[in-house]
Amino acid sequence: MSSSFFKSLTYADVWANHVPDALDVLHAAYGFAAAGEDDISAFVEFGTDVAIIEVDDGERSTALQVTGPARVPGLNRARPDYPFLVESAGEPPLRPAISHATVVATPDLDALVEHLRSRGARYRFDQPYGDVLLPRLWPGWGSDKADPFYSPEVDAGMKLEFWEAASSDAAPQPPTVSGTEGGVTGIEAVTFLVADPAPAVALLEKVFDWVPDRSWTREGTTVAEFAFTDPKSARIQLVSPQDPDGRVGRHLTEWREGPYLRRFTCADLGAREEELRRYDIGVERGTALDGSGRDALLVQGGYAFSGVFEFVQDQV
Image 1 (tube, rainbow, N blue to C red):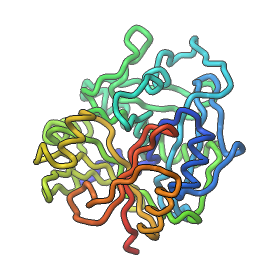
Image 2 (cartoon, rainbow, N blue to C red):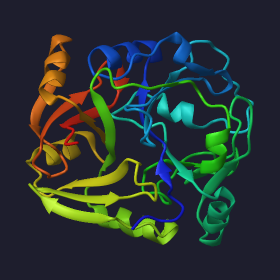
Image 3 (tube, one colour):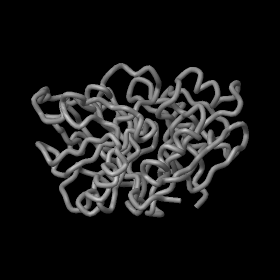
């Protein structure tokens, strides 16, 4: 069941080496709405460029966030949260998918801070600073510069970042690009690859009172799926192989545990495959890696961004 602290998954995120290039290829080949220079926000003090792309008519509550190094130098190493996410996310990835953060809207940020404090959990709570106008909560991160680094001991490696839902709606945000012109109709799930979901499930229940909405094992894959209180939100899935020689098993051997694929629905799966191949992007056609047996396309970001996308046919 969903925990009251988890209202919605705000973003499915990808890390880009150069945000403008990533936006170009995401539109041309992957089918997302067109976005350009005017749609990129530069958070100079934090050293990042950010673009937000909604994948439907704006009715759903999860968007695609594309984050990358700022093109304008000016990283403020004296800022309160340095060293922090930019440094860890900007390291050369050892896997095809890395995550800047898993951003979650929560209905009462102060209540969640108090909850983590009462559980003795490690966290960092940042007040508004510089380009960021809202307080943010980072479970698993050290609380000051003496120990600023991340540990998965609180959120099972998800790198959760909490914003208060009401404040997030009211505060200025990066420009948002909306549209369905390219045929991507929604974000279904953000997934994490694990050897065994049981320890992560137990930890998330212990710390956040968050338990899977449902779990299943099919086609050699075990999935634990976590829901949010907002029914329009994408979900989070822990994906674990039962067959070490299957596709998910091979991914675990090669990539190890960590961020996995982002699953999108599209209007026409065949047309999406044709367009990806037209841009010489490698596409692996098979069944969805959630054990559902649905036809799916698996695509790695490659040079443009560090991410793994899975496309399935929209059934609506």
